[in-house]
Length: 293
Figure 1 (cartoon, rainbow, N blue to C red):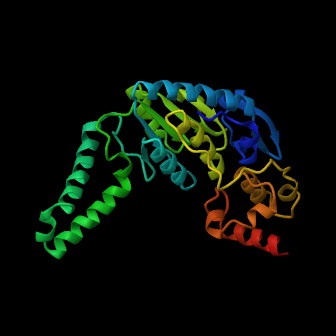
Figure 2 (tube, rainbow, N blue to C red):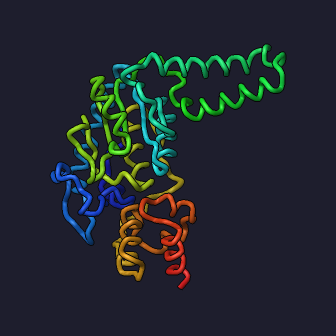
């Protein structure tokens, strides 16, 4: 099991919360300070919460319990799919399926239909179907696989839910509470930790922060390789972005996303910048102007 490392958490911006005016007072025990109008998490508290969640997940895995990873926001989809697949867990990245935890039989019907279609495509019967029928089946498979592919082998409700941003996934959290299923969640300063069994206070908007937290949780469920293709650099002071002539809202959005130096942003594509909460086309243009100025 991988141990939480404070330096790595700092490097990817786990400590950046939302703007102070958007906070939920119930997150106060996990907040260290306020800087430039943005709340800063107490990473000592985050580390302790991570360790508690890891122990819970490790004990569950030893008993053969199944876990469902959930993250439908753009910044979370890739990491959710990657780490769930690495440990053989189920996952959802497109949208929450209403009733998955409280009316599982109905969801199972949709999953069974997808299995049936895939079996038809791999059987001798496939060649006997008309081109039009094959096209219709392929289209239905594509549509259902995008939505249900991560839970194709699920035959019963999971014993735990791992969530990125419980505010966005509030319907899933509500169902889990009703069904008595524990929830482990990466939760930002605007969330409500009282609804979460194992809250992990941290930045739930930056893809690098999400990836690190999910890697630590996944390591409690099974063996995962330490990624070496993208070494984590030492934390750098936010002088460049904070001291630049960019508008305050743009600075805050970049810092919240885990960027502290303009040189880091230079390597990021426009598409990735647009995926950052609070940045639009005009903001990206301002950033590019600052970089080339």
